[in-house]
Image (cartoon, rainbow, N blue to C red; front, side, top):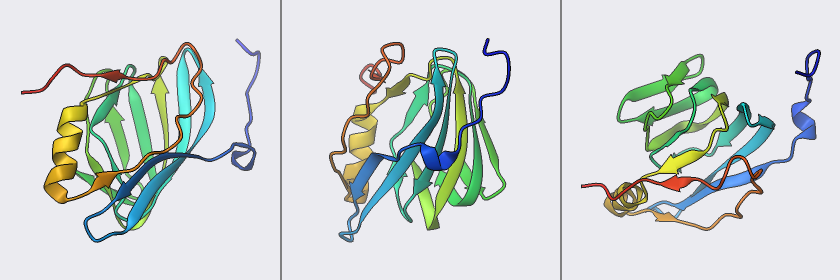
Length: 156
């Protein structure tokens, strides 16, 4: 317990490039993110997606809420536009998500340590289907308690 609120100015938090994809039309799109607050009990983040940016299917080890501030994102489950709240429970798998024509800006949080898990084979199949290529981004520094993510067992 801190004994009171923690106030963080978004301008003081560095950007991290977390995704970069070359689309079939040659455009390179990405997602950049600010990790506003992190502890073994929660992660709070802010991210900005280029128009057409894609995130892989994944989930987190904790309940996960997202508020769409600007633009939109679509998934197999539907479209979330500015003003939408997305709620995912611990272990839910979601995505791939694709930013709309204006891109997308989101604020979110994950309860618990927030460690992600991925279905890499499903992600690679999806990229092949749409003719896109994942490009390398620097691995962000992770606190020891969050780990580096988990790959799900082979999907059928």
